[in-house]
Each structure stands twice: as structure tokens, then as C-alpha cells.
Image (cartoon, rainbow, N blue to C red; front, side, top):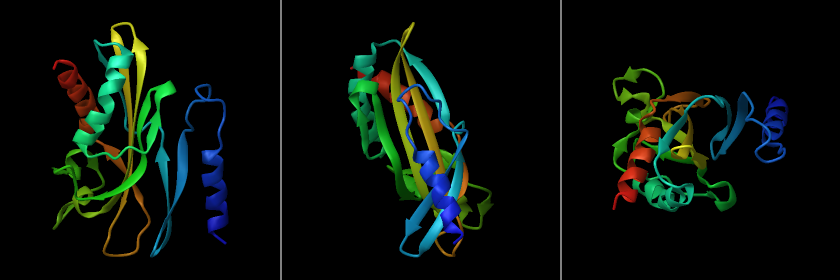
Length: 180
């Protein structure tokens, strides 16, 4: 019965309010189901949030984002044109993201004999981008959260921290795409 409280917390974290009026919760607990069992992880909303400004209209920036996410290897499963939000609510990846070692983007703990944990663990990555109007053009707000666990033995997911590299790459790719 230990999963009943986790399920309640997970469901409470998913409860919806009025869109845009409620700030994200300070933390969310997720229950992850797999063929080998169930695990839980708590992720803090403040982790991995970065805002960059680009000198372009929000609609122009918005049109570049499917290309940007494809370039980064992030599959899209969230596309809300009205809110200009695009990304993925959580996908599993191991070792590399579009040819780049995950340890370049996230820190999932100390290096072992096999290298940084991010490169050898099973990682669940959430990556969202929202475009908002700004005085100098558009604000690109990226939110990245990751959790990982070893693939060789049973262990719950642990939160990873963002290095800010992937989030910064979004604005670089947007600027490059807009300059063509």
C-alpha cells in the first residue's frame, strides 16, 4: 500500500487550475511505471528554468521551434499554439541526445568507472519551451527537468540538475534560423 500515498501526491500534482493564473507547484512527485516495477521521483519546479530574449516577434520565434527541437533530438508531444508552448512532457533517453552526450546537458551525480552517470543511466527528460512577448522582441522560456536511474540494478529515479547548455542552445538555434 505504499504506492497509494504516492499516487495521491501524483494526482494532486496533476490537478489543473486556471491556465496561466497558477504558478507551478514548488515540487511535484511523479510515479514512473515500467516493465520491471514502479518508482517515484520528486522534481523541483525551479530547476532548469531559463529565460532568454531574442530580437524577433513571438510569431516568428514560434515558427522556428519545431525545427529547433528536431535539431536537438527532442520529440514533440506538447504543442499549444494559443500559449506558444511546445516540447515534451517526458521521454526516455540513454547516453546521447542527437549525438551529444547527456552529461553535457545534465548532471546526474558523480562520475564512475563508466563515466558520468548521465551517460550510462536511463534518463527521463522533460523539456518545454514557451514564447512570450518582451520589450526587445520575444522571451524564450525553457524548462528542463530530468531524472535518472541505473539500468543495471533496481533503484528509484533521482533528480538530475541542468547545466543550462541545452536551454541556451534553443535561443542560439532560433537566432540562427531567423537569420536565414
